[in-house]
Length: 70
Image 1 (tube, rainbow, N blue to C red):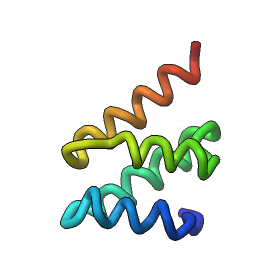
Image 2 (cartoon, rainbow, N blue to C red; image 1 turned 120 degrees about the vertical axis):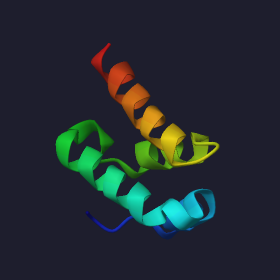
Image 3 (cartoon, rainbow, N blue to C red; image 1 turned 180 degrees about the vertical axis):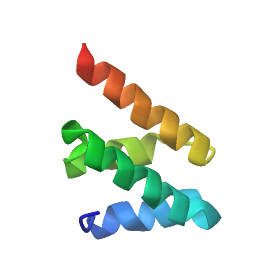
Image 4 (cartoon, rainbow, N blue to C red; image 1 turned 45 degrees about the vertical axis):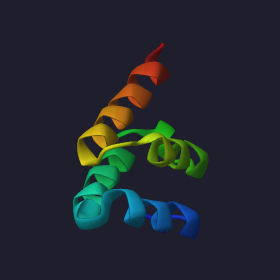
């Protein structure tokens, strides 16, 4: 996975705490599979919108994918 800006990585540490490694793994998988995510602005939005842990992070990634298709 490419290196993310410091504000994104710092926010991921805060939001995902003990699930940070899993969050990075999930994000890397989505970045590999979906070109639309290769934007710091989109990643930042998804991370900052995510509340209540890793499950919602993945849901937000899926929602971003669905809205991209329309």
